Amino acid sequence: MDVGTAYGRQPGQSLLELAQVGPGTPYGEVLRRYWQPVALSADATTTPQRLRILGEDLVLFRTRRGAPGLLAPDCAHRGASLFYGGVEENGIRCCYHGWVFDTEGHCLEQPCEPELGRHRDRVRQPWYPLKEYHGLIFAYLGPPDRKPAFPVYDVLENLGEGEAVYADDKSFGAGGPAEVDFNWLQHWENVMDPFHIPILHARFSGNQFIPEMAVLPECTFSYTEQGVRVTALRDFPGGRVLTRLTDVVFPNVRLIPGPRLQVLGPTTIVGWAVPFDDTHFKVFTLFRAADPGYLRTEGLKLGDDQFWHELTEDEHQRYPGDYEAQKSQGAIAVHSREFLTTTDQGVAMLRRMMAKQIKAVADGHDPVGVVREGETTTYHVVAGSYFDGVPAEAGATP
Image (cartoon, rainbow, N blue to C red; front, side):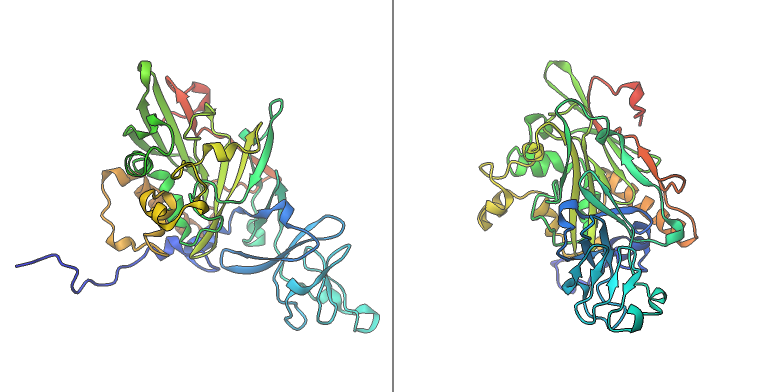
């Protein structure tokens, strides 16, 4: 008798409390307690741009005096979209009846009303606060009374001679298109899965990094103050041991050492997996380097060293990377069908920590890493690649 066939297989369930990001969703509310990158600074111009972030449709622009603004698109007057508006010195003017709103939603002018709107101060267009940092625009989409200090990263400060910080919005590390078309969690939790590297990126698709990355690492997982860390040890020729520390930082930051070992010590790459909605996201990246093309040299080797979009469908099948593996899990992974084992410890720890942050926010508390005193707070980056042990000053003992 045949058993275990697919006949009668029941639909599985997704961990929607972790995967969904819209207003009012459990983890969507966690994400809204932090600053999120939403665009390159260069994208904010005097031509309004549509943005979709955390399931919300918004309009981004920059006034002619240089201030960026992020407003709800539907004009507070009659609902016409500000995407069709005209940007002026201090704000954006609706194309329908000419109402003008500044970057904080104040109504400055109602040209069809007596005295340009005697009661215009009673009108407020919904808006979100913005900050610019090293070429990225960050927005805070959470409750105003919970707005945190803005986090800066020590590896992006105090630059060396010839170095600069560059911003990238092409989803570095996702291995596919610039706008990734599946649930963000499938990508973010992959950071805590070091065992896919010697299989997917070496044994299966050819060596996509350096030969030593094909070695199955000895891994330990630990909680940090603001996330989860994997410590991976690999033996190198000559008896040297590489210690590779990879961190996820809440709510959606990834700190991954370059897999080609061009940089030793703390990683100089900081990435954010930012959901547009439940089935689309983008990785925004800031990196410190002397060469603006540095990310290209740290990326996957695809086929005959091609870009992802240059591969044929047959080549995508023969040389799958992170995108192909994670996209094939579905628009939102069916988590109830997973069979987690000991090598999935980091993924399980990450999900448990996410659930704790959901509860903290639901109970009226701040999630991990939120500092609400001062304008900025500094994050000390430890994740990186180290030979022959991690320096004590790194503070990285797992």
